[in-house]
Length: 72
Image (tube, rainbow, N blue to C red; front, side, top):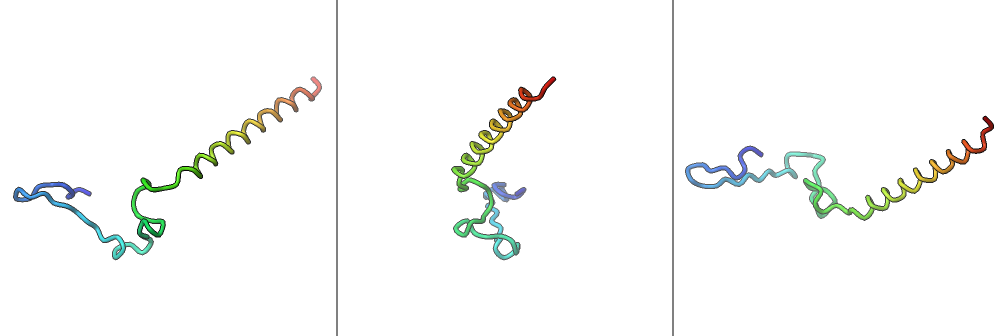
């Protein structure tokens, strides 16, 4: 926000937007919403990355086997 942390007449300004009143799709962090991703669960992301790598590895191995079987 442009006005946050600026000085007006020698006083620092803090901007606080009431998103709960201004945006219909906003949820508080305690209900799984809020701004930013500092509190998200990264464990699930790591599991998905690991599974994706394993699947890619298996697909590469299958492709190599099929290429070996194919007569030239």
